[in-house]
Structure formats: C-alpha cells, structure tokens
Amino acid sequence: MNTLLTKNNIDYLAAKHARSVFSGKTSPKDIENTATKALGVLQENGVYACFLYLLAKEKDNGQQLSQQMCQLLKNVGLGDAPANSEDSSKVLEFVNEHISQDIERLLLAKEVLEQMLTYVRYGAKAMSKDTPEKTTDTAS
Image (cartoon, rainbow, N blue to C red):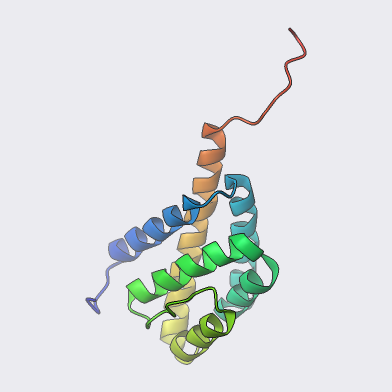
C-alpha cells in the first residue's frame, strides 16, 4: 500500500467502505441510527470508545460498521486489521496497538472514520428515499 495517501484517496476509501455497510439485510434506517450514534461517540469520546460502543451496544449493525471501519483503517495504511472482525477482543487490540499509540495515527483514524460514518448516514438517507415506507391508503 502506498504510504503517501492524498485526501482524494482517503475520501474514496471512506466512500467505498461506507457503501459496503449496506450489503446486509438491515434496513437503511437502522444503519443510519447506528452510524449516527457511533459518530457521536467517536467525536465525543474517541476512536477506541467508538469501537467499544459498536461492539457492546449495536449487535449486527455494530459488527457491520466495525468490520468496515477496521478494513478502512487497514486500507489507509494504519495496520493490519484482524482477519476475524467478529472477535471483539482482536478488534479492540488492533485499535489499541495500531491506532491509539501515536497521536498522528489516532487523529488520521478519527478523521477517516468520521468521513466514513458521515457517508453511511447520508447513504442511508438516500436509500430510505428510494424505498418508500409502507403507507395505508384510506382514500380508496
């Protein structure tokens, strides 16, 4: 992986991994809700807390987001993400050992994850508009 990443490369990777979150059967509204909460935790408490939150509180959606977040950090060049991102202890070890020990890496990780989660939120909103909610037609 090229160690010199431009803002465009990072933006592309964030968008790519944000789109990958929607490959499951979860509704866009549920993913939007999880991404919004995770973004809040990330901004208020940091990268490690965000992963803790996703793994502890957000079951399936948390796993999906956590997996894509790990892959994004790997693709940005911040370390080798665990092969099995369903193993919470390995994910947290990855974040602690490869991200949290250096302030520059930590700030880059936070910026990239914020970008990805923002794209997830907007993507979910766009997908929700494409699939109209069930309505009852009382005028018939």
